[in-house]
Each structure stands twice: as structure tokens, then as C-alpha cells.
Amino acid sequence: MESLIVLINTIQRACTVVGDHGGDSNALSSLWEALPSVAVVGGQSSGKSSVLESIVGRDFLPRGSGIVTRRPLVLQLHKTENGTEDYAEFLHLTNKKFTNFSLVRKEIEDETDRITGKNKQISSIPIHLSIFSPNVVNLTLIDLPGLTKVAIEGQPETIVEDIESMVRSYVEKPNCLILAISPANQDIATSDAMKLAKEVDPMGDRTFGVLTKLDLMDKGTNALDVINGRSYKLKYPWVGIVNRSQADINKNVDMMVARRKEREYFETSPDYGHLATRMGSEYLAKLLSKLLESVIRSRIPSILSLINNNIEELERELDQLGRPIAIDAGAQLYTILGMCRAFEKIFKEHLDGGRPGGARIYGIFDYNLPTAIKKLPFDRHLSLQSVKRIVSESDGYQPHLIAPELGYRRLIEGSLNHFRGPAEASVNAIHFILKELVRKAIAETEELKRFPSLQIELVAAANSSLEKFREESMKSVLRLVDMESSYLTVDFFRKLHVESQNMSLSSPTATIDQYGDGHFRKIASNVAAYIKMVAETLVNTIPKAVIHCQVRQAKLSLLNYFYTQISQSQGKQLGQLLDENPALMERRMQCAKRLELYKKARDEIDAAVWVR
Ligand SMILES: Nc1nc2c(ncn2[C@@H]2O[C@H](COP(=O)(O)OP(=O)(O)OP(=O)(O)O)[C@@H](O)[C@H]2O)c(=O)[nH]1
Image (cartoon, rainbow, N blue to C red):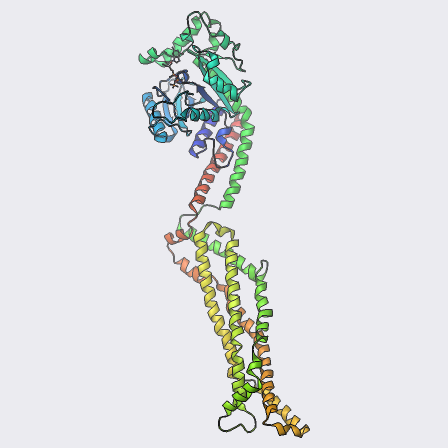
């Protein structure tokens, strides 16, 4: 049965290691707070330290005037085999065994000062001390600062309330047994410990009343009213204690001798003799140990369910935070490549369907390009005046005899030049859509969210590839336009020539206007028809070039350059790409530590329950 206290001790120590000592524990339900404990509460000089030392059978607590206990002391007692030597261990000094208990006292003082400073502040961060001895029972007690009424020199005025609220934060937990120490030589109605205990445990269900200094009561008086529960009713019987007096302490009276003297006091006391078996510090320790065991046993189901809830919550959070990053370069490279692939997959889904974006590319070819071509200013270029001017400039001093061959070429070349604008605009429009899709895909890649530096690098690498694709695409579409100027479609003009000959045979009057306005209008309409034919071709071929050079390339090789570079990177550069937000890293570390604690605690409790 004792194994349960040992188990709770282990979990308590582990809680302190992961920073869970109640209060703020990063939004998780604190395991520390759920663990049953015994808190020692009392006013200054009530005899708190003496009771603890008496239970342990050792002289080890700091003494002095003012507020000596300024941090909670979690005192875990472990019973060892008879004949073994007593020793103590601190959680903050692992692997150091103290066999000299005056050094334990010194270490408690030093460790208190390490956190609170020398100016007598208080802190809620507990000190963990384990004592191993054949003279103790398995028990855990938390020694808290003595309740006080006035601050001493050098202490902040708020210290009185600070101490009370710290003590209250322990004793108000329903899992906390309150060891309320009151001196018998003071009126119980004025006891600080009982005042607080009554507030947080009005029914007295979890309060142990301990009456010290019975030997210091005025002659002829006794504390039977209190001890018998007549003055103050509690669920458990009051326990009277006789500790070492100040004179005993000064004379270094051994604790074992003090225990014996205490036994003798009760056995021979006319007032308390009949209660002797239920009085004294040894009895108190056994009683507490038994009770703590039974409280722990009754709380195990709720502790387990709290642990399981916390495990679920932590696992969920860790999933969101992502797994920790490996330290070796190979694993880092693998992680980065994995994220790149995830990003590329999302980017392709935007293009191929499944995610929005690809349809906008079709919109450019289906609407913007044809509309822009339709709006080209061919009317102006092929107006009667412009045609006359271009044809006569091409003729030079010798007007054309049959057909203005050079004039046609110049008119066509001039018109074709207009196609460059919509061709360039198509390339640029697709470029911007692709850039936007890169941005979206980066934002949608869950895995990348933790790594702002890698996101920036990937966007830069993708954009520089897109820039290269844009240049290629620009060259290709302009080449398509230039190709139309380089070689005109012969058949088109041959057919025109045959048609005009047929017309002049069927209508002889037409030849009269051979070199008048009608002739130039005819030239304009022939050129317009040719340009229309070219426009129909380009509306089809420009999208093909753009898709081939930009969209297809983006799908195939958006990150190729990045991959080449990264495969040559050293560990440090890879590490820089994976530099996470430090707060996030810290949080993950904390979650992982806690998860480990909770899983271990669950397994240990499970095992203990089965052994039982
Ligand atoms: N005669 C006698 N003296 C006691 C008894 N209990 C405590 N004392 C003395 O009372 C004084 C205060 O005892 P402590 O154990 O230091 O009391 P405390 O509550 O820990 O005091 P602070 O740490 O100052 O808050 C010491 O001089 C003890 O020797 C007792 O049962 N009988």
C-alpha cells in the first residue's frame, strides 16, 4: 500500500522538473494540483518546524527570527530498511547525498535565497527535499511560510497578504489535507491556522488539528476541550504534541531522545495519559501516512482521467505545432524537401483543378486576349488616307503598275506590329497569376507555417524561376508575331488576284477606277482580311506558347534551381532555413516534456493499481 505515496512522490518531483507547481501551468490542468498532499500551516512560532523535525526525527530546518520559510518545502519521507543510514537529497542537486543534516539546513537557506534574493521575499516555487531513513513513515508534507501579522525591516508591506495568498492557494485545493498547527498556550480562537482552515474547509473534513506546546500551558489548565473536539469539531481527532523547548534546542537534545521524552510526557500525564496512544509526533506521522494513502487511493480515478485528458490535449497541440526538427543535415534536408513537395503538390492543384486559380489562366486566353486583339486600331492604320500615303511612299517616283506589292507588305507589317501588345500582355498576365498562386500555395502548405525563413526562400526561388519562364515565353510569343511578318501566306493573295480578274471581266466599268480611291479602299480591305486571318491564328498560337513556356514549366521545374542549391548547402544553412519562432520551439519543448511526464505517470499509476 505504501507504494502509492512513493508513486505520488515521484510524480510530484517530475511535476516540479517540468515547471508544474500549480497556478499558471500554461492553460493545462495542473497535475500537481490534482495530487493529494499534506500542507503544514501555522502562525509564526506555533511550532511548525518543530513538528516537522519531530516527524522526521532529524534537526534540519532553518531557524531564526522573522519569516524563515520563504518558499514551499516539499518534504518527501521515504522509509528505508532498519539499520541503514539516514540521508537527504534535493531535487535541484541530483546525485548529491547529504548525510550531514546541518548541511541540509544550509542548502535550504541557500536555495531559498537563490530564487527570492536576500531581501526576504517569498516565492511559490517549491524546494523538493527527500529524506531516506528507517525512522520515518512514507509521507509527503509541504511546509509553507508561517502566517504572520507584520512585515519586518526590509520586507515589502505586502508580504503579510502574499504569504496568506500563497498558503491559501495550497490549502484551498480539495485534494489537500491541512495540518493546522496551533500552540496550546494561546487561545484556540486566535489561531491563524484554524482561522484559515475554517475558511477553506468549513466542515473540517480535511483539516488535522495539531496542538503544540502542551507542556507550556499554565499550571492547572489543560487542552482537553480542544483535544476532545469540544472547542473546535473536526472529522479527525486532534493530536497533541510536545516538541523540544528552546532550551532543549540550545542544548542540542537529540531528536530521538526528544521523541522518547514526548512519549513519556503523555504516558505520565495526569491530563492526557488516557489518550497517550493517540498523542505525539510519531502517532501523527503514522496517522497522516495512512490517511494520505487512502486519499490517494480514492483520487486515483480522477487523477487518471485528468492525466488522460492532458495527454490528449498535449498530443493535439503537438500535432498543431509540428514535430521537432532533426539536428543532422541529412534529416534537415529530408524535412525541407518534404515540405517543398507538399508545396509543389498544392501549387499544381491550383493549376490542374481541385483548388481555385487555374481557371483564371483560361480566362486570359478566352476573353482578355481576343478582346485586346479586337480593339487593335487597324481602322486607323488602314484608313484611305493612311493606305494612300503608305502605298505612295512605297512606290517612290515610279507608281506601281499592276499591284502595289511593296505597299501591301508595308501595310501588313505595320498592322502585324500591333499584335505585339496583346501578346506581351498575355505573358505578363499569366506571370502574375502564377506568382499569386505561388503565394497562395505557400500560405496553404500547413507544414511550412512554422518556418518563416523557408517560406521566404521558397517564394524567392519560385518567383525567380517564374521570371525566367516569363522571359522565354515573351521571346516565343514575339517570335510568333515576327514569323507572321517574315513570310506572308501566298495562297491568300493568289486567290485575291484571281477574284479581282474575274470581277473586272464581269464589270468593265470597275477598271476605270483602277487608280482612284476605290483602288486604295480595295487594298485596305484586302490587308484587313489578311490581318483578320492572322489574328485568328495568333489567338490560338499565343496561348499554346504561353502554356508551353510558363505554365507547363512552372509545373515541371518551379523549384529545380532551389533543389540544386539546397543539395549543396551545409548543415548551418539548412538549420537557418528551419529556424522557427523561438516561442514556438519553447512551447513544443514544454509540451513534449509534459507529455512524457503524463505518460510515465499514467503507466506508473496503472502499474500500481494492478499491483494493489
Ligand atoms: N516547550 C515547547 N517548546 C516548543 C514546542 N513547540 C515549539 N516550541 C518552541 O517554540 C519556538 C518556535 O518553534 P518553531 O518550531 O520554530 O516554530 P515555527 O512555527 O516553525 O516558527 P517560525 O518558523 O518562526 O514560524 C521554538 O523555540 C521551539 O523550541 C513545544 O511543544 N514545547
